[in-house]
Amino acid sequence: MNTPQMTSPSGENKRHGRGTRFLMLKATLGLLAFDLLGYARDFRKLHQCVKKWRVSPPEGSLKNVDRVCRAINYACVWYPKRVQCLQRSAVTTCLLRSCGVPAEMVMGSQIIPFKAHAWTEVNGKAINERRDVKKVYSVLERC
Image 1 (cartoon, rainbow, N blue to C red):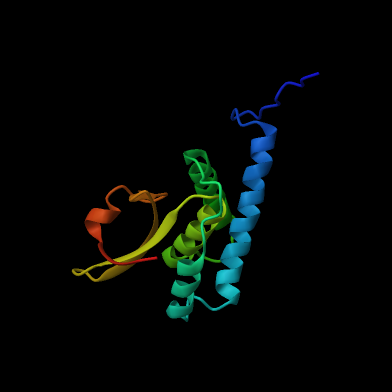
Image 2 (cartoon, one colour):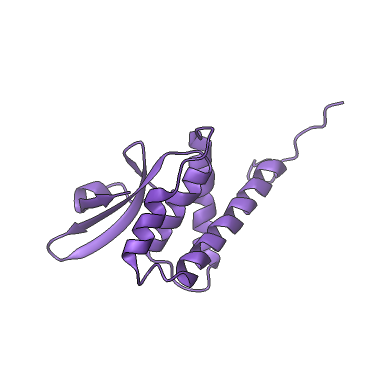
């Protein structure tokens, strides 16, 4: 006998909601690991970690991208300190790869006024980011 899917007021089914909460927990733990491992102070170590993080099979869908972005947004809201772009993009990239999505962490800068920024791309498109990020910042590194 089939049971009907229960949905929340937003239309999200209960099973999908639990998946998002689990991803949010993983995202929060990723943010915490970033802080505890000192990646903010050791860029080389962070870069190597993200670069070596493999994409898990099977290849993920766009649904996974949306779910991970939502989980990261929630985790950043509830994280006890301000999350910087480098931390956010590293955790987003690794979490997406864990869900089977081939994501890249991208770091860029602008010259005047000097600013640096990091973001995540999937299939060459910046995700969970302002639309003009690729116009504002020149890419320095991808991993």
